[in-house]
Length: 240
Image 1 (cartoon, one colour):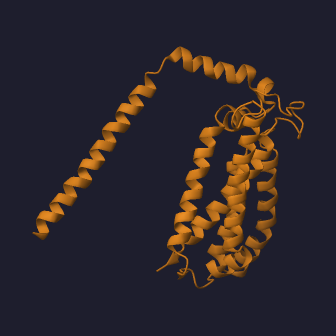
Image 2 (spheres, rainbow, N blue to C red):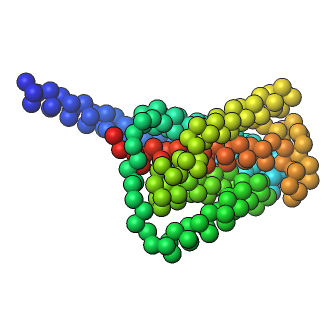
Image 3 (cartoon, rainbow, N blue to C red):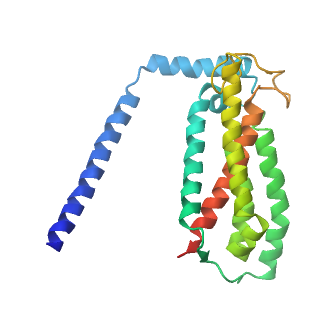
């Protein structure tokens, strides 16, 4: 009886994997065979009109936070959901990393590196619409600060410096702020998460205060990604 149940489970899992594989193959096939003229039109439009319509010098930022900002919201939601699930799953687990076996050179190097990471992360986020970088990259750099502290000194020290409750609050502020800015676009008739179509505060391309909602969306997503990745990492570095 037990062997029969195990076989059923095995066939069930294999069936799921095969079904998923077929679905992905069909999806990628359809994507590959999309109208090439339409794909070319979109790319040419982004390059030719991106700065004019969004005010962002960084065309990647204009796509992520204006033309396809709804997709970015979905990506951010994945991080939010993962962090929330893990934080609820391991609320009272003890730290997996107990000891600090690094030499004094490593410890001092980490201490010296943290402020530079903070400045670099902030720069990438704030100037994401003007230069290469952006909120996701900047958020990852910011998250390295508590992650390094966890690796070097343990989860306890890291969570003492960066309270999990405050990290969750910051992540929630980033998510809610992102949605509220999207609703402002709807209220002005420009559309959800769009400012370029309504010419909302586009300013002069190349200036820090240009590109409408994009700089603010950069900041919100940056702090959300940074807090979310820190929560996920510390949650995974705990044991039952």
